[in-house]
Image 1 (cartoon, rainbow, N blue to C red):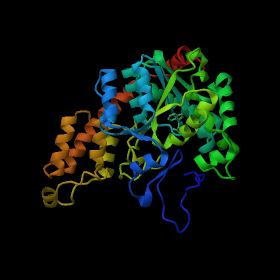
Image 2: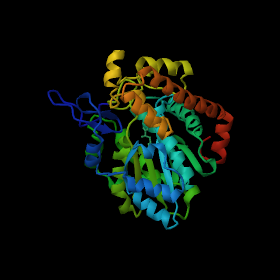
Image 3: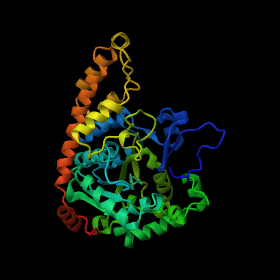
Length: 401
Ligand code: TRP
């Protein structure tokens, strides 16, 4: 973990919950308190009313991640829907910091959800690969960060976006021109004290880190993409992201009106739990804490069987009597993300909770579901050869070469 966070635990103090782009840890090693986070960050809860509204406006059932509360918080999403109802379009913006070669299932969540939003609303999408960010925070070389960005771009393209409406760019390749002008405008509005307050930078952090937030801020403004949105300066922006990215966009929303831009709206997710249990997000340094899109069916089977934390009881008799504790059970949590059939999920929850189904059976179903998703992803990714990547970038994403 980076040591840039002001809220970091100090000796003798009780560890408080910390959620920011570089650190996610729950109080006293427990679960993240998402209600508290909503209050702390000042965002709004995504309630039933909005979900129904999405269903009505798009004429399709809400995505599993909406129905089951994976995306649980927002900022001004209602305003995006108001505008959409009036016949105004908007655009989507999301991104990834390419810090590792292989993505795990948690990394795919915002992209799967963004694909649904793009299909449902038929809107353009920009995807930022912050190779510069990871170069600075993870101490990777410029070249290695760029290579990871290209590899990750293949996984992202494999999620199946509408390529005629999608622009993927890496910061090292694209930053300049109108985008850079917006960065400078943002930078002039944010004092050093302000970023220290938002991000917890210290005097020991190099100035690359301190100057980075405008890079992630400005894709929220359509004028940063003149080749896509020229003459559409009033186009609204909706950002699907995990809630740890909120600090960047609090800053962005703070400065937007001063620059004459709309504040970007946000739709924010909780974290995908580690196999070992729900105490934060998955750790890239422990390959056994997550299912990777590169895992084979065999890997998936053995990881789930060996590491997925079970809420089942430790003897058959006890389990039949007491049933599983669904609150802590990771197979049930994972099925909640990826098993689409509501009726089947409800059935499994009831039977497992009553002790009529056993952990092994629930794990077997989960292994099937995940193997299918990972296999599908692998096939789609294999179709994104270097040549396709190049062509796509040339045709649709002109700026990467
Ligand atoms: N900072 C993000 C990460 O480390 C990457 C990112 C850039 C992003 N722009 C974004 C994420 C917009 C969500 C939305 O992964």
